[in-house]
Image (tube, rainbow, N blue to C red):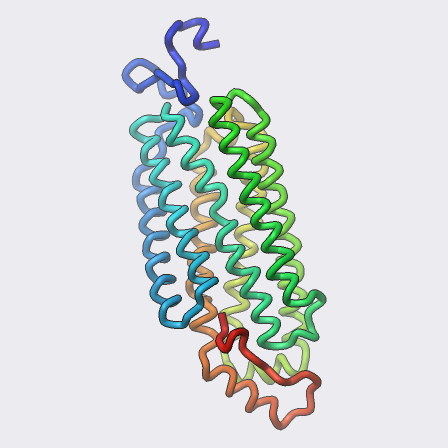
Length: 309
């Protein structure tokens, strides 16, 4: 409509001609200039967390967990850099798509780290108390995570190809995000179920006494990260359902609070509850020593690949 009223003016899409010099901010998708302090703070927090995970990954050889967290950190920094770009040019379609794809897919990477880690944790502690075989966490939830990532990326690519005018790309991204939410909810249910069953078991109580607070820290921060991710994903699902020109997308305070803050807190929860810090090599000896005098079935505890990951 704006193109018809103002020939030569294209406010949105790869061929956008609008700039702040000739178009009002209300013609942009967000209708505001993203905050530099907020987005710079998110970049700093994710970058610092990424460096910490890189160090811990090298120290504790938690290659999968730390690798996923580092990729998440890089992806986040790119996404929030895109929002800073939008501050200077709210009509940049490249900046919009860059931050939309990167920020939306953030939880996919650290959830992949958590899915595999929980499977290894169940194998480490007590496979018989899990309702699912540990291998399912590797292949089942991780496969859903990859499909969700692919759908969201494909949706972003189609939105780019259609200059944001087609709803097909939005709908595909919406399916990917819905799959992500469903996967996280299912995983969270099995996570809570295993934690409850484990700590109620005699074996779990003895292990908790042997390891100390580190065990609660690990499970607690993992559960917190998943809870925050569920809340964030529901918000993004509702936001994306309205499309790129919906009402929720125009409120930066909601985005900062329900996207940026929730995800960065979840990211740092997994940093503080890093499995390498919780399951040190001495943990195995402590648990085995605690259980050696007890009569529990399947009380042989082993580390996956020789190490807790």
